[in-house]
Length: 364
Image (cartoon, rainbow, N blue to C red):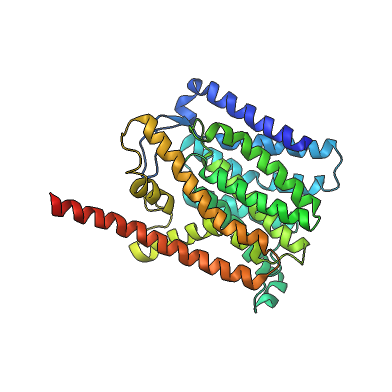
């Protein structure tokens, strides 16, 4: 509990200081209202909330050392391994000049470091070809891609006030619950510190959007969630490998679906930003009619309400994941059903807009 309080307060205070003095460094840290298809805020806003999350996690690391926890070295190693991707994301937040390829490369560097130094490896999928994972190079490659990919996945869903941070807290709560059930204190305390650090940011981010995570925060949170998920399954054979998969299915599938939509269907780079993410469609096509006026007050409310819908989507996977965390077959079925539900909802929202356009033409 002490580590939770310290991590939360550190993150909370750093966010306050960034917001309070953002006018002094606005040309560096503020995210403009216009400048890209994924801008949905109504005034320039600090986008270095990742610094606060980083500070909260750092505070938790210090507390672990002062309390002489058995797992203090492992947590510190993971924290240090996250530095390349965090610093790369922070450089992008400050300069807007770091390419997506460079940031992905830094995510891979962090993933490789944690694989080699902390022995973080995916050891099973609970599928027929698990024997391949006994071959160390195969395991390292798959683990590296999974960690780097999920670090980017959290960044993909970071589009509205409280969306990425809220989804991350839900996922970490599920991981903490199962860690408690299997008595894995390292995973439990790690989740606690991360939830606290994110919560300190969340207070300022939701619902008014006074500060944003930025790439640094999204990459950092995604990295820790991925590493904790891999370690939970590796350290506890009774936990199905499909438990974390179902738990994180929303950001993972959003990323894979975006790659398919951009590269295969449209033929352009997967890194090119657009306004066709699921959360963007909910904001622009569903909530557009719920909040009539377009002044800042209503746009901010529409922004934050979008996140509630996506939290609900995450809870649909969260509930069966924590109920059946040992039952691989049930978790696999639930994962497939969730993906089918997502595709169905996506098509419904797109067609809803098409019908609206046709109706306007008929009556005009």
